[in-house]
Image (cartoon, rainbow, N blue to C red; front, side, top):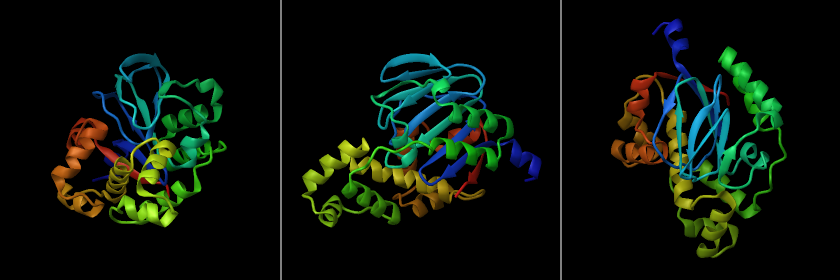
Length: 249
């Protein structure tokens, strides 16, 4: 594929702790995923169904595991932030979600404007810096250790083992994990597999190979998980608009 065709694809910028996709349009059905969401209309307001209620604004945020749907006929930035990382925890947002006042987050707004204009790695890095500029709310040290262990592992780790490593009973560990991260341990582990799949994906790679490399049982397991978390299997996005993956790390 020539360079012009590659650059014409919708960019998906990945980094440790989050990702941002620029799409020419986006319409999906209600779904919930582990990452927190920042949904921004780049040139016009968007409509977002959040926990069953519709909002229309330039920017909307949703906390982890909150049911949401996006409707935009114009270009949109879809930003996902991992619930255990500093970008999300540094925004200081409370509740299930709502309209995001970009005039109170001028560095993020400026970075998004730059990214819309340039759509390159430098602009994406500027957005990442703006997102990570806040002072993150502290994460319980035991849960932070467990999250690091899960991220460093290529497969699932039993909750009992994680609890033992941080000196808690399994029931207390699972309760504290949910309270601190905002999702269950099982959902967080599925999220990490989805993130791993995004990171490992390359042009020409079959979905079966991708599923196995990311730690899923098979391609149907990958498809079911992505449909539940993002309302669609990867093949639907591929048909709607081709994506090019850019790694910032």
